[in-house]
Image (cartoon, rainbow over all chains, first blue to last red; front, side, top):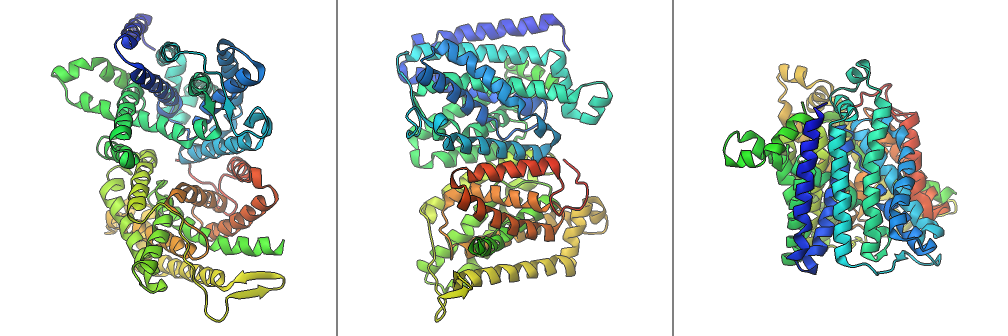
Length: 327
Length: 288
């Protein structure tokens, strides 16, 4: 646990960065603003996954399901019950936090087995969503949800930005709290952590619920942003994998890693789409392979090992953060 | 009923071949290979191309495709996996996933993205009747080939010096290297055998069911499921698990087609929680 003043300082930096990003729509067109919304969602999802996968060391391979369930709860609340978005988001958060508790028994697994269990659970939930007519669509015969398209892209820009800042502030708080300390201890050695008085099951469950609620919030915002959602659009395995890939790309277990990975890969992904549509997935996959093979610590580790110099000073917070998370 | 059981058993042989390589790599190298399904679709796709466009006789096409898949798997290990799997086995999960994306894209660009089925009929005896069940003879030929190659592989692992060095590396790499086993070399050969075995599964499969590159992830998951059902560290367990999985698959999709995957995954989670060592596993498993 670090002194409160450091946390306050970091939160101030976060607010400043958020204020700068908030000026972005003044000089960008609708295309870039829309891309920024996707980028915020990607960063938020990766940061949320990082709590359980990076800090606690439990690689969940089913985290995309919380994003999908959040989107579906929001869509059902809006389309079936006519709820406003301001109600749909908290409803999605509450429903998913209860839903995430159902995953608690899976914490008896570790490593590959935990990864597979969460993957299997996520795939099972997706099949159920596809099979139950009440969840599938308004008419019972439909295969998705149509949502009103009455909010501007600027609204979504600021809404997702606020959600992202809250999510990042939450993670900063977590890193500086007793829970963060417990999670890092669990990552290092769970038996020793338990012997030292860490209530492992409780800490893991809390971390898992926190890391499940934020994807739900982003899913709840994402559904009306897309206007039409179907299982293919929000339950796709790519959401889970992107969370992991973004985090690993930037630097797993660090605060800045998912942010760096989210920004870099969203941009690279977009450039690959627009310029080499046919080879898009190949470029993406090759990048992931190269980063992991030659830089297992992610992009951030580049700056850490370089020592002094201007490059290192520019990312000083990154190096500090990394050292903190993996003491 | 009887037809479900028979077809489940027939498909189980292919599952067994696909899962065998997966279990071998998980046991010896201690990594989960997300590019495993790629070997299945690669073996099948190459066999189809060599047989239809290359004009090779089908058995020769299968042999070439199988060897090519094995070489690919070994090269993949040498170039990428070898660098990181000892330091961080979980990272290999993401790395091989990236490799599977690249491999599938390359396969789609060279071999084609469509579904492929190699139509082969056994001359003279197109079908076989077992009681009321009618089975294409080719299915039985595929089944026989799969079982035969499994037996050869088991003998290879059990009886030869090469197999003994693989098992030594699985049990304790450090003592193996003290005993002058070249551990890195054994790891590469293990990947080669995994590629051979899985590629052959694909080459056999393409004669009975349509196969396309996009199906690779399903095969990775299937192989993982079979290994979990059978239990780690037990090759007969993997075989039994594959046949069970084949039959369960046919039953689930026949009686509850819309929620069959949910049933299978639900059963898997229960199994992992209640009997983590698998149905036929050898006692407690060390969880990494």
